Length: 325
Image (tube, rainbow, N blue to C red):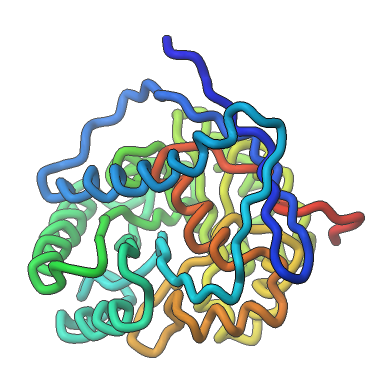
């Protein structure tokens, strides 16, 4: 077995204030009993290879030192991003309704985010769905990816995964919805899910060898009441992805802003359902500058790269502070 290579503490500094990210990240070849990506997802390996080269070029310089400065200048205009959560596949859930609407969404992304960006399609699934429905939806999503890669051959890369609604005693289809080549699974719950049920379901997922990525935690009652619960989940091995779409809903916007302000999430994703929703562009970047203490590049590129490289995420919060409510 090859030895683990540990990347030491990564200090991310901005113009205004230093933000310390506790990154005891393990770079290791992880033996998993997962199937290799299907032919329909053949582009996934190319995307992951490109991301791996970019990440490891940065990581390798940290191996012989205890701490380092990783400067991310907020004013640099660097907008290459990885959007881990979107509902662009047409006609399969409450996202894009038609192929025309889906292409409009992707065209907008292509025109407003940096080159070498990656968009992950994550249509809705449920752990209680029949295998037949899951297979049909997955096939449709893969065919859509093939078509989009023909329509948009340059500028953007695409992957297909899924967002799994977890509830009750059913716990299936994680293999079908995981991010290609990884053990990370994007999961969601009903908004009224209890804290105890969340813990039980997360432990069940981890016991099966997968890593849960909790979609839009700002929408769950247990998180709105006590945001620091995300620290416990991160210590268990979970990731937390804030939805930019939540900023459009009065009920969830304040919690979403607070999570970004307090460093209590690993990434922000568009969760785009229509051409009217936020995307990870300069407009959203400017909006986040008013309240987020985490640099834009950390939540839109650095942390998503760790996920697509099947690596461990740092524990929350992403910067040091005295108290979190």
